[in-house]
Length: 144
Image (cartoon, rainbow, N blue to C red; front, side, top):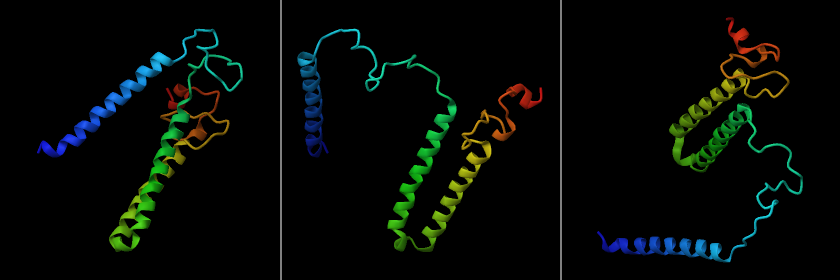
């Protein structure tokens, strides 16, 4: 059992040694200067305005998660299409259920207002984004 594992152990040791050598050479040969502009973020030649630690609305993260979900489903559908003839009716029924679940998720995103980017405000927990107005608070929305 141990005899077939020795190439893997040698490979692991070589990788660790190579990483250590590259990091060591980078430390020894790297530039060492501390100017004021060295520690500032590079903004493609544009002078930075404001802090980089600003709050990003949760809506951007929701869109990112939705993109990942609906992008990954394309991988599964392409894999299904490649094996379409081998899967038969059983595979067809499975992909129909899969696409049905995806459409349900898309309708849910649509209904909660996650896809609305207009002037209306979007607040998590509200049933529909179109009911929220910029003047109303969440307490007014819930009726308390």
